[in-house]
Image 1 (tube, rainbow, N blue to C red):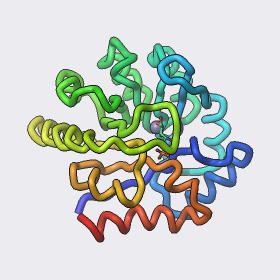
Image 2: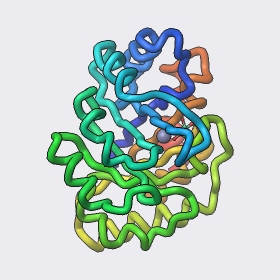
Image 3: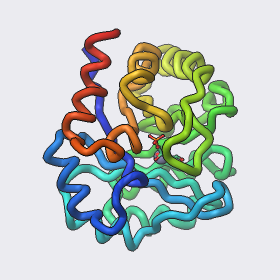
Image 4: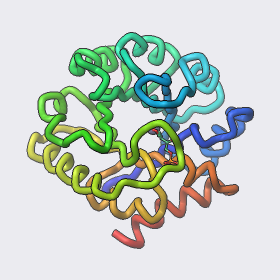
Length: 222
Ligand code: DX5
Ligand code: ZN
């Protein structure tokens, strides 16, 4: 069975206690930390930048997965690498030189990801998928935590999984938005192996139990 990795999104954590929140999910069995970077241009919200990522880096040994929802992402890749990112994804919709951006991330020693919005077609990955380590498929329109999962995106995950198999490339599929124990079986059956979960983890008092509930939903229903 394919290993599923859970990446709690810090966006739904208590921002006044980030160090404790990070230690809590590490103890609870998280595989990665998902950090949402928003600029108020590409998405209608503002969140954190490299300084906060760097401060968090000292608080946990979990790998950092930085999701850049910003205009001109290429300009900031170096700053996030320096801050300690282990994975960086850039949105295809805002990066006109995608292969170059992915190369920069890999040259900096991190895993490179292409993020796509719910309305962006699977076929749009065709010329770049060989250059990335993972595809981040948004299952909500990015900008906020706690939004409703967009179910038709499941078909697109299936198409991307098929493209990966046909090309014979080692690319993971990460899903982000509205992931909880009811949507997890759908996305995992379609081919997702990295699950971002914000409100479904940090919105619960017991984060370990919340992550176990997500993991168990796979073995029970798939
Ligand atoms: C949304 C962000 C997500 C967000 C997910 O734009 O990219 O990572 O934190 O939150 P939930 O899991 O609550 O939908
Ligand atoms: Zn995200």
